[in-house]
Figure 1 (cartoon, rainbow, N blue to C red):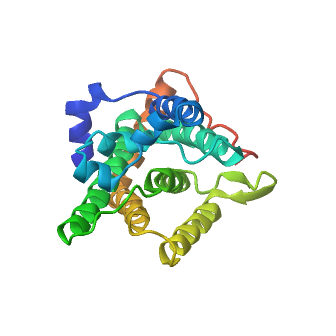
Figure 2 (tube, one colour):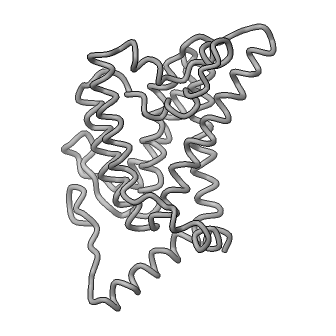
Length: 239
């Protein structure tokens, strides 16, 4: 397959444990946001700063901008990134997971930049929106959708105490994203961010489904040959 050829050629460049590395950077950005807000705010995607002040690094650093204040939700997002991210990486392989993560960043940046250029060309410059914050919420949504695709029968604790299949949590996530998209107060950039993550997810499920299955089968075969049995972590209850 196409992805198999890519992995054969570029697989050696794949970054292992990428969720942990992103989570560490996010934790650092939380600290910066709390103690050096003037620096942390330079990480956020800002159409005005990009267009008028040529701060092009924001096209790359927005993904590390903290999703709001350091509270229970923020800590939970980092936890989800590490827990579900590692599960996905184990299932689909490091290279394919790298593609999924970088694909989410690529489509999000392209769509948000396209929206910004459209407004700029029509004489309007979008200010510093909360896209850098909300985009990370949508990033976790997209990550969980990928998890639910491969572990649909896994049970997770919804709101920490209600056991529910991952499939139904993914359905709830899709409903929340649809609500955010249609809500009148949602900014254009945030709507673009939602579209970006869904585009990346559907590209992944359309073209990556076979590759994911092949990766999981090959991984199981290699582990069986080595006498190793990989057991998925208990998210909350036994699958």
